[in-house]
Each structure stands twice: as structure tokens, then as C-alpha cells.
Length: 275
Ligand code: PEP
Image (tube, rainbow, N blue to C red; front, side, top):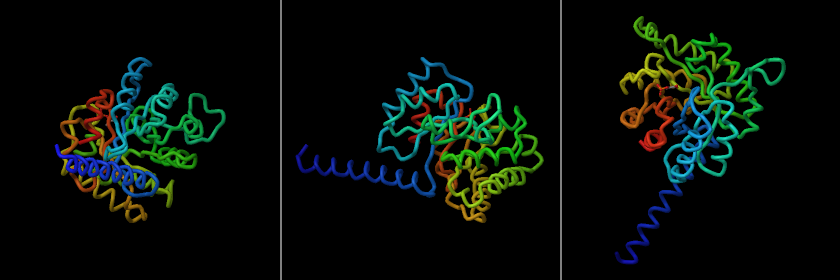
């Protein structure tokens, strides 16, 4: 290859890397719509398997990638995630947080503690917490506020059950859930992330059709816009895989994904991040 052609190729590659880095850094600092793919490991993992997964993410997710990649790990593995990912472009966070800052709350973990482990994100209101632990909309709002007050970005989950969907209650349910988060955060909602996760699609292998998901995302965006927060990133979650991510990400109001099962497989998760 001629030297001039190779140099122009290199310059183009540098320009692309620089642009991606610049846009991502700008989106992370501001309230621009962040292109985010976050993994939710749920209660899975172990030191050895985590090390393999984190090392691959750290080694293969480069500065030129178009999205922010993050993993939300079980509390005991936060130190491991911090050690493996510090200095890389992969972020990490927790799957829940207490609404309290400190005190006699046995078993709870405060947002300030998560900050000490370098967390960037905390998921709040995941449907498994709402359903299995009885978390109310108000509690989810309070958790989002506690996370944000400590400097974390809450990823606030909303989503309807199958029964609610069959009763045509999707719009009412997600709007009520989002309203609680908006009430709790006020103007600061613009610095949060929202995840639309239809409960019937989580861990079931069933995904909302991209157009169905888009319709809900568009309604959520309209609601956010009325609160002055149109630029909030809205992730889709529910059996996202490398095979279906690109069609979901092609929708105008889907800014990324919250990924459960597929985030435990490094190759699959990296492919979703790049879809
Ligand atoms: C989740 O846990 O948030 C989730 C979306 O899970 P899965 O991708 O496995 O459906």
C-alpha cells in the first residue's frame, strides 16, 4: 500500500476514535442522551468467573466504542469490579441501593458506600425488587433520590406485567412508575437514566417487538419532556441479545439496553454493546 494512502487511513481512524471519545465524554458529563448498555448480573457470579468476564470486557472494550458499557454486579463483587475496571472505559455499578444514607438498616447498602467503590450507576426499581421485595413506586423514587444525592446515576426501571399488558394498562403503569421518579428527583431527573423493562420479557426469551418498545419509549420521552428532561436516556430491557439488539437500537427513542442473562457472556455482551 502507498505510504500516503496508509497515512490517510490512519488519520481517518484517529479522527473516528477521537470523535467517539469526545461524544461519549460529552454525553457522560452532560445530560445528553447517553448511549448506554448496562449489564445486570443479578445474583450470579463467583470470583473466578467474574475475573474472566471482567478481564475480557476490560481488554476488549476500547476507547473507540460508540456506547458506554457498564456492569451492575452483586455488592460483594464491587471491589473486584473496581480493581478490574479502574483505568478502563467500562463502568460499574450496583443493582439496588438503600433510600437511607446510614443507620440501623440491617442488610442495606448506602449510596455513599457504593461511591467508595467507584460505582457510577445504581439500578433502582427493577421488577424483581418490586415483585419479590414489595418495593413501591414511592420507595423506588426515594432510592433514586438517595443514589443521586450521593453522586450516582440511578437507572430507574419501569415496566408492566403480562396481566397489565393484557388489560391494556401498559401506558398507565409505566407513566405512574415514572411519575414517582420524577416527583422524587424534581429537576434532577434530567441526570437519571430510565429503563423500560416489560416484566413479561425479562428472562423469558420473549422480547417486545422494536415498534412496540418504541411506542412505550416515545410515551416515556413525552412524559420526561413535560418535566424538562427530554434528553434522559431510555434503555430497553427484556431478553436483549446480540441477535436482536441492532433492531431495537435502530428505534429513535431507544438509547441502549439493560441486559440480564446475556451480560454474563462476554462475547454476547460485547456484541450487544457494539450492535
Ligand atoms: C434484567 O434483568 O434487567 C433483564 C432485562 O434480564 P434479561 O435480559 O435476562 O431478560
